[in-house]
Length: 192
Image (cartoon, rainbow, N blue to C red; front, side):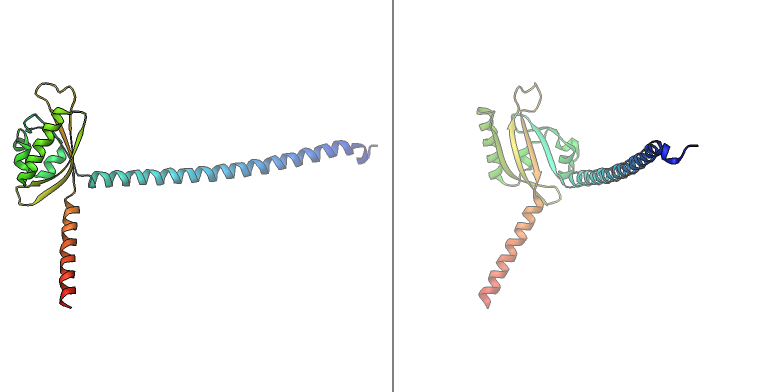
């Protein structure tokens, strides 16, 4: 008859095997738990990034007021984007072919635009930065920070110049309100 001491080596091997299987099972479960946690975090980060991207796109689409004009050598508008129509409150038929100078409220700005175009004809690689004020049909004014540049190799009947303008009317309105507030504050200080 065999005693358990005869099978001690086999029993020890089986116990060690069971222990190693138990350790592997525990390690595997911990690894899966970490992997699952990592996947959940990645999924949350991805969803957060997608929300931020959507919010950023919404903000850009709703706040970027950029108009784009293609001008010929005389300053006539030959191309424009949809934002130009929205900002100027003008139908496309009225804007097409109109002189940009006719939209400017200040005669000094008309001269500035003409000299900038002339300068770009002489040095086409430069770009000009202009602040323009356009008089709208409803009596309001549209203030633009603009870049004017010349296109190389202009196709026939195409745009010789591009004017890229950003609507900064709100900034001008705020600055004017601030100046009036400062004037009132100065008057109050003088009275006291």
